[in-house]
Image (cartoon, rainbow, N blue to C red; front, side, top):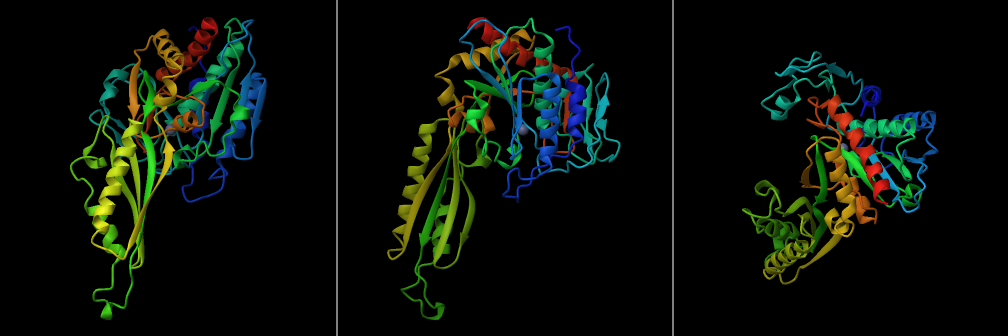
Amino acid sequence: MSYKYTVADRFLRYVQIDTQADPESTSSPSSEKQKNLSKLLAEELREMGVDKVEVDEYGYVYASLDSNSDKKDIPKIFFAAHVDTAPDASGTGVKPIVHKNYQGGDIVLPDDNSVVIRESEFPMLKDKIGHDLITASGKTLLGADDKSGVAGIMDAANYLITHPEVKHGVVNFLFTPDEEVGRGTEKVDLKKLNSDFGYTLDSGEIGHFEYENFSADAATITIQGVSAHPGYAKDKMESAIKIASEIVARLPKYTLTPEVTTGMQGFVHPVKIEGVLEEATVVFIIRDFDSEKLEVYEKMLQSIMDDVMLGYPNSKAKLEVKKQYRNMKDHLTKHPHIIDYAIEAIKQAGVEPVVGKIRGGTDGAMLSEMGMPTPNMFSGQYGIHSKKEWTSIQEMQKAVDVVVNIVKIAEEKA
Ligand SMILES: [Zn+2]
């Protein structure tokens, strides 16, 4: 496209606004300062001339661009990114640095020479010769996760408004708080979003597109032991602490555990153990790409528990399973065009699509679970959640092209 992109300017502006999420907080948003960026985005969208813009009390931004096409059944598509940054590194006083026309080699950050973005750690750097890279200065994270996505979506909105000859249906924009503390979709209003499907721009490398993620359950084992005075406990006491430990000790060690699994392999992972003599609980997360396998793992857990309990006839244990989210693929295979549009749009931008799988969840996975199919697409983020975070201006521009291409393709195919 021969277009004067605004994505880099926007990105440099947005990363200087501190939007770090607070994992300790229970309010929404978790940190009030996230709203500073939400408000700015709403202001900029209004200035651009986007038809409907709203920021709600939780810091979500909903915006909508009307259709400019005569066609009636174009799907309503939304694009989403999160405004918050990770709690893992400071987001206060971010000083973005543009490294124009990168010529290879390690990048030493000026405010702390011990922070070095090394080619050995980021082998993809060798493909970025000639790119304009952006890093932080050494004292903070950069916030490419996910302000590259935010800036990309904002620039795509700007493109569509300044190019009325590009025909499109209703295009919606969603900016969310608190993704980094796992609460990004907690207060989302699907009525306001008013879309048929959408895409999050929250993935790393150029061309990456993800419509598969772990299916996830949480399981809790609660144990009631038998307490007694330790001096007179013979043949009476059954310690809930020991029962819990025995259950954990019997979990598989060489399969089904995060330390030894990769690719498509799932796991059963104890994340919390708590207890006293009388009562103990063990919390597990259960993950696999194949949703049906979760039940298999849960049966295994149940049989380990039942087996251990045979040694404690006067104690009780129960296993409770809570559904968390499912592989987006379960929802998306019913709507293959959502995947096809994205793959085609990436190709049209002159980029090789790389279909990946997420060994975790995303906001899109939660939205898909809520009935709003939402795969995830690259926006140009590397070394996320750290002071070594960086991005490439050229790749952020490609993400803008892909967004524009998706709405074009959806109009053409309607
Ligand atoms: Zn992110």
